[in-house]
Length: 357
Image (cartoon, rainbow, N blue to C red; front, side, top):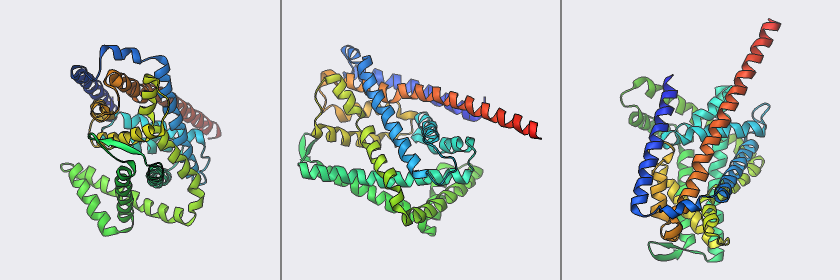
């Protein structure tokens, strides 16, 4: 068993252990009750899994539109498969660190060069950044026009004020990434600083990291300039990614509707949307594979004010099982099927080479 497989196995064990401990904690805390198990039905899980799968298809469509015309023989199927590779890796690695490398690996299996793969994924990342900003802007406009409110620590405040904070933060993040791409001295300082933090005792890995990050930011710069000249071509990709964000941020609300039986309400949706974004920001910086355990605990802390105590645990179970554990199993199945197809394709190419050789 090679080092990478050992790492994935270790991470899988960590996921199981931390999840088990968090569930024990939430049971003792009273968040999850025995009667909540009745909420985990085929229908409720199917609702969450269905929206999750739809969101992945929409994300893959955005990536397809973003990369179309750049990679030869690019297709929606390749886009979706590459995305699943990335989602699988991000689900079993700390801080989702495996997402980008695994997607590069998948693209190289399709025959694309390392540089082509980085270029394609950089384009997808630029589209995602612009779409995320537009997503916040859309919510801000709707919240302002509808005068929507949200409860924060027992106080009612305008939803647009809360969204404005996220809007500004995301805008500054985009500006910072652009500065790294275009301002060489700042880029060198940042990359060296991060490399020292991540690889203090391994000079070889530190050097490799510096080289790969420098190439990545070079490609970012090239793609930002190139895409900016023909930005209208990427409008479909951006709009589709905005739709993806609204879908993926609705998963907890879908779980709530499935468990509670309540009707859809726009103000409730946006409240759940913001809390979901907030929860994601918190769990994304906790270095546990798949945010196992931390997602469940953060959920209990953030949503206990908006979900009735008698169904809070049920919503948590339906959401987490339907949006993480079931999709993880499906992704693993697809991964092994895809690997088998790649291997079969490699053997076929080798046989053809022998025949013509």
